[in-house]
Amino acid sequence: MSKSRLIIIALLALAVLAFVSNPKIEAHRAAVREEANDYLQASLEEKRSQTNSGLRRAGQALGAAFGGIIANEAIDEVVTADNYLLFSTTRVEWEGETHTIGLGLFGKVFISPNARRIVEEEILELDK
Image 1 (cartoon, helix red, strand yellow):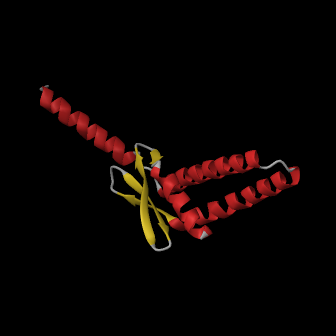
Image 2 (spheres, helix red, strand yellow):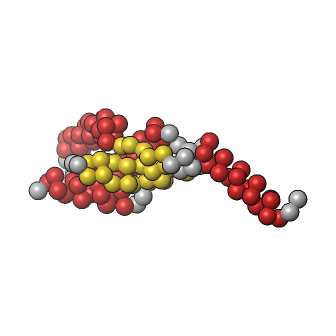
Image 3 (spheres, helix red, strand yellow):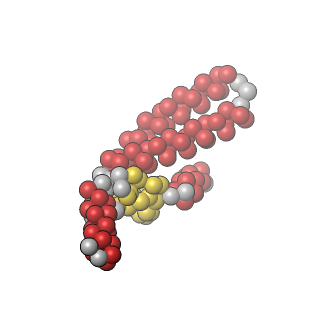
């Protein structure tokens, strides 16, 4: 078999693998949920380091738990995935704006580091 045929067969096999393993919407939502939970935990740890009161810490932990529940519910509403057959993208719609924040490929969803920046900007806007 010639070298060019082997390359074509390998590329076709890779395309079939990409098609079959393209992540579904649930995987995109799970990846965003994981990223949101990581963000909430990091935010909570930062606030804990600034707080000495046990009662205040308990209140923050309770608030974070409720925040996580609300975030999980909201994620189902605002996260979508665009399927391009061989890969997919994770999109978030927030206040009428749509942001592409992730890429799904070979069964895995990769969330962009810029996603955290977008979340922080939106939180700062809410605080104004």
